[in-house]
Length: 413
Image (cartoon, rainbow, N blue to C red; front, side, top):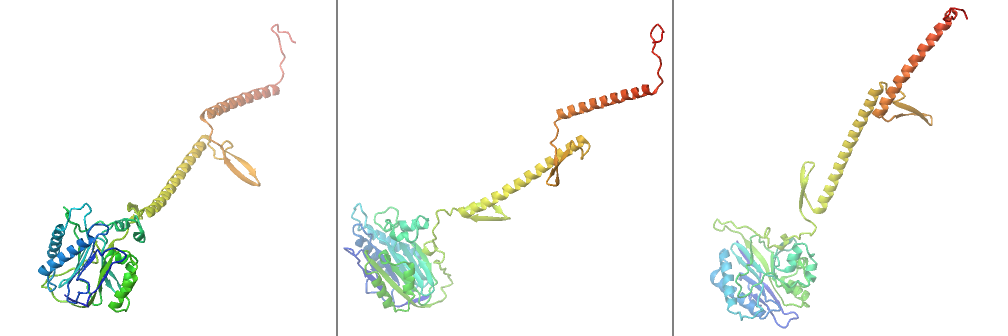
């Protein structure tokens, strides 16, 4: 593809600082629509010679690209990484051995036949905007507060007010054994009227992503948008610098059979893809419910576990009631078998309660009591039998004729 741009616009403000540590390329006021390379570097505040680091690294990159790259060809990643290695060596030569190393951030855009290559280190930013539609790319800050936000330790708003907001986790510094590497993505979804906005963090003291998007979505001219940004950042404390690059036209064409892929939609370095992790949203897997396995947060899974526990308790209660009913029926049947008569007085008794006859089962009789009752019944039956025999005998004597009573002498009484 061939990307044609309007004349780029630069911003370079010192803010309320004693010196300017930001450095941009092309140099302020020298950019043209024929340029392909754009760089914004922010010298590390509080470190010695931050302005030396930003200028040295920027000009070394520009020197290498001028010799080894062409906007009419696809930019290989190796050219970019070799350019960064070359700039590191240049910066090493400027190292004075001080304990506090000088350093700088980096944002870089290169427009070429394959699209746009973006690279960054630190907390200076790159935006790709489609006015009135959406943000397509926002580079992820290599900063402590952004890491805390992404892990859910602080909110998005707290990043601005945190005392650690100026602590960065990546920076270009000389004399380092392990060189810090940039995040690199390849952008091919470029359309006419898109904007690329690259800026140091000082530009964002009083602006957020929504403010940037709204400003570029207005119908103002590019110069008017630049003026509005300068006015909005007039009272900023830190150095603040930027480049505004407005796409005029895009001509697509075959690229020697090679297919390019737009990486900004899925790039991990796209801050739009970095959602914060809530502290209490610990992901857990719980057992399937209603034949569906579910992944829930801790609060949801707790609710689901509580509901499942209630169902389990009710299930055991029904089983307990069923077993108790079976035992009661078995006991009643045992008592019925013992008495031989379900309507016997020993098995039940009736009580009149407000005109309603209530039948109350008698408690089962213990075995030793049953034996005593059985023996008593046997004795009672024997006594009744003996009494009946005696009564019968007396009746027969009374009904027979009276015979005289004689003694042994045979005399009558």
